[in-house]
Image 1: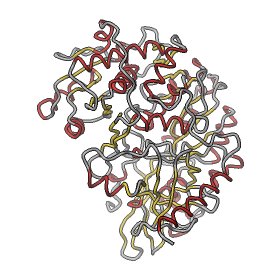
Image 2 (image 1 turned 90 degrees about the vertical axis):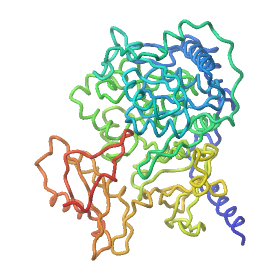
Image 3 (image 1 turned 180 degrees about the vertical axis):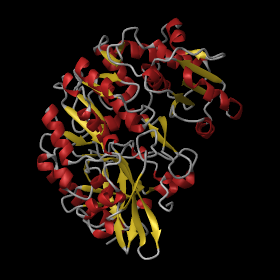
Image 4 (image 1 turned 90 degrees about the horizontal axis):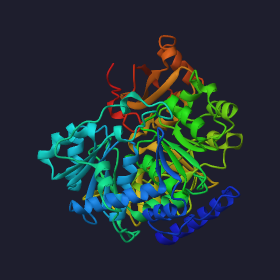
Length: 570
């Protein structure tokens, strides 16, 4: 049998398994409330249908759908005045704020390309992205202007547009505001002040809709190995991602209220803050950053029904001394992401007992795929998802497909066998920006080589085992750090962990777990006691060496920087 015929048979079998396992009542096709049109046209449709509905609420500052539509039209016109044309890259150097939404949709309406840059970036990192994209215009928070100034001479920047938290924080906020957001306005010489400039403009004629095939964004990968790569995503990628998750991972309509604090420069924050709420015509309560008291207050004040957070956040809320002061009965869906802490049955039961809702893992995705590519909804009965080891990431969302192949040959492996996860989805990156060799290595016959180790079990469920480069070989046995981290997350004294390998003459490699203890547990437990606890719960070859450290090094998106954990140091 030819390779193509074998793959066709393999996928036919998988589609049959997925159909059999599909939870009753969930849509099996992407759902488009206003049709398959650009996301900016969804904004226009909702603005026409419900102009006064709040699109974004920021500590009490309200931007309605009509205002967001009008202001983003004006921003598109402002960019045109500054010489930006379709296909030009516009850097966005902003934290979460309503202005981010205005800028994002203005860029999409113009058909320019959104280049989000982490507001935590230093000058070197900002310079890299600006030079990689040849961006000539940047929108930045006024407080970040000094970083922009540092790179002016080594980039093609010719226009700087600034904005301030001070423009959108009410005199009397509706919920607590973090101190970092209360900073005074910073004057920036030679820059265009965004909101006053838009307010002074006459209303422009709306631009014609962008094509779904137009490039919309360059979303940069994390860059934990080498410099980040820009993933080329189209207008169609954005709207498909929303449609594929609509009614499954995100059950919402125009009456729903979302809460998000995920950084909107990050692909998960782009989805959950900028795209999903607007696609549904819902209201987004936006926070500038994670703040437990702010989250509790916002859920209570605005009757939030849909939110997502790291597992760590859910645990922090449950442990908060003021937790019981707030009414969280409006919550209907809480999606969690296992970064440092991992979702486990105890956390789920405790949350359910306290709130009546079920913590559900948000599941598998990558920047390259616009993330949100699988779902675990419908598999929580008796903790089926949590007990289905190794790490269960569920079924592909409608339109996505997975296969498992041999890392070296690319040949399909039998169900239940380990190999490389390859994914094919309408939201797959079209290329890496200006990196044809990396594109050719990663995109093979329409499939993305993820570099992730996984398996598809005989029922058709996808399981994630970790990054290939993270996999350890202990006396020839495969050991996957995420599995050890998930177990350690169940220890009551452990705040978080990162597991890496150390070369060993006798064993080949040994796992080393760097552990950050909860503040109240510091000094109460020894590495030997933690190692003994692990030995009772996992195979002997998986039991890690334990190193307790003051704090885990973290990325801006909440992941452990494993490259900074030195297992060879004693």
